Structures are given as C-alpha cells and as structure tokens.
Image 1 (tube, one colour):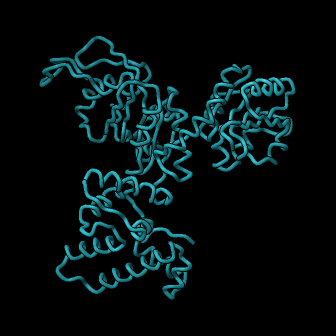
Image 2 (tube, helix red, strand yellow):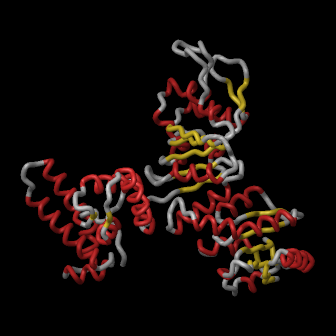
Image 3 (spheres, one colour):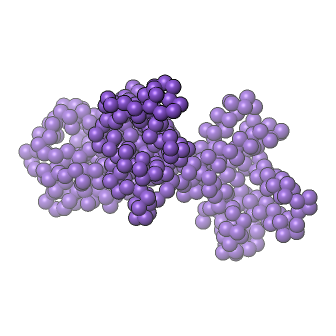
Length: 438
C-alpha cells in the first residue's frame, strides 16, 4: 500500500451514520470502501485496508462474531468497533482478541478520527522495532501490550521461566507516558518476615535495626511501573495486605501513622498456574482479578521456532560486544539451534551462546560445538565413556548432520539416513533433538 493514501473499510448499515463517517474521513484524505452488510465485507481482501471501522450489530449478523473467526493476521489490522449496546466485559474481550478500540454510541467522532489516523503510523513503528519476537504469537502479544501501554490497567504476564516476561514488562513501561522508574521485584527472593517492610517501607526506629527511614517498593514506583515477578509465591498474608493497598491506592509505612499514596502502573508475572493455586487456596481469587485485567501468556520458545534464530542473532551480537571477541556463526550452527527443545527458553539459549563464544578458539561457531559439549559432559562423569553413551552420541551427531543437510525436513532426512519417517521421529524424541519440519 502507498504511504500517501490510507485505505479504510467502513461496515455500517445506518445510512446517516455511514454517510457522515465517509464524509469526515474523506476530509482526512482516506480512500473509503463502505459496506452496508457483513456479507459484502466478507468477500473482500481485508489485507488491502490500513484500518477497519465496523458497527457491531448489522442487519445480517454480529460483526464481533465474524471478527473472532478471522485469522490472527487479519485481527492485527487496526479494528474499531462502534455499538449502541456496549458493555465493559465485551469491550475487554474484543481488545484482548485484537480490536484496537470499542466505542459506545454516541461517540466522539473527532476522537475516532484521531485514533484511526494514528493507527497506521503506530503499527508501522511497532513493526519496525520488534522487541518480543517475530513469530505470529509474539507479534500479536507485542501489539496488544503496546496498545494497552498507556491505559491505566493492571497486566498479568504468564509463561514458563525464561520466556521474556520482564522484557515484556519493560516494553509496556517504555511505551507508556510514565516518567517514573521501572521497579522490578522478585517476590520469591524476599524473606516472608521482611516482605511488609520491603513493600511498604518503614520509619526510623520502627523495629530493631531500622536505623533510617526506608522507602518501600510501592513508594519508589510512584509515577512509574512496579513489576511483581513470581507473584504466585506471595504468602497469603502479604496477598491480603497488597490487595488492600491496590484497592485504596495508599498504605502505611511501618511505624508511621501517616498515609502514603503512590500512583504506579502494576504489572505482575508468574510461571505458576494461578487457577490451580486459587483452587487449592494458596492464591486469593480477588487479588487475581485485580492483577489480571489484561492477561498475556508468552508461549515457550519450543512452540515458536521462528524466534530462535532471531533471538540467537541478537544475543550473539550483544555477547560479542560484551566479550570483545570477534566471532561469527556458521549457517550450520544457526540451523543446529533449531534442533534443541530449549526447555529453559531464551535464558537457556543465551547461556548456551555465551558458553559457545567463550570456549570457541577458531573464530567461528560451527555445528560441532553441541556435540563437543555433550562429549565433555560425558567425560567429566567418567574417565571412559560407556558403549551405550558412545553409540548415542554418534547417532545423535549423524542425525543432526542429516537434518542440517535437509534443512530440517524429516522426510528428506529419513531418506538420507535410510530409515522410515516414524523411526526418525522416535529417535529424535529419544535423543532430545527437538522439532523439525514435516
């Protein structure tokens, strides 16, 4: 699409409302395609449009129902819904599923114009600076997080350890208009006896050892963002005190009778199942709903192989810069990264790359590094490698080479090895060689 002309799809069955919107957006230089029925809109190539405005209830159907059936790619187009029957629950549901805005009639048309006009430029900027990943799942998560960054709602980030929850939290903070600090707190690392003092602060002399006034995490986050990492590890007593502080927007320092107020954006993160924790009584349900106004789940790295190479290239650049070691990675090495499961996610990938750079003496990383690491680990455990381990290492190396030569395709690799596709899948699973292409 040309950057000079912005293409807008309008889906509206009210002739007066539709004509008014067409005229107003034409003044802004939009090329508008107006559909009066969902059936008309469903025949169009939606990727032609920079933005889409749609009434919710039309004569031939409900637009939001149609929207939810579309692909992730099509829901990433800026959608703006207009309705005379709006509700908070439905509005949040649409935003979580990709809608840019959900406006209740009568609405401020100038606000709509401003939102739609800015949508294309904002999306182009978001695409130019990818932070979380290039896979469809992470791109959708990033777009949602950028969208809610300036809205004063709590965000809960869930996912396995190492998937990048703190990176996502920092993205929300940096995209917001908050000028204060980003305060990250690892709830699992604070002794239970010190939690209240660390969260709310204390006055000088409040307890033995309190030799000066101390500002707690909530107070230090004033004007900024507070990330509560591993929030699922908070003890129940602390959960109750935190909930009260969040509800009342104020708290008391230990040893003080004066109320302290703090305006901060709250982001929480956890790798545990909070629903299971609520069921067994170790996490408060009311606190969960306070924390999870917007919930974003970051999938594990093994479920988004598109991000492995992207992450590895960025990490290698940073590691080489920090280590001041001129080194490059071969194509075979980069492909070999796709054959691992990365159970520790991005954190494990970075550790592996750092080890590869530090131990490398040739100036180039090749696919044999992983095999050498396995052999070293085996030799560390015993002076003589047993036959089973030796055969396993040889088999693993040969299958890895076949997969690399076949660009990760299982069928082609099986032909090269002279075995069936099923047998190769079974060997890959046993040898922990990760996923590959079919």
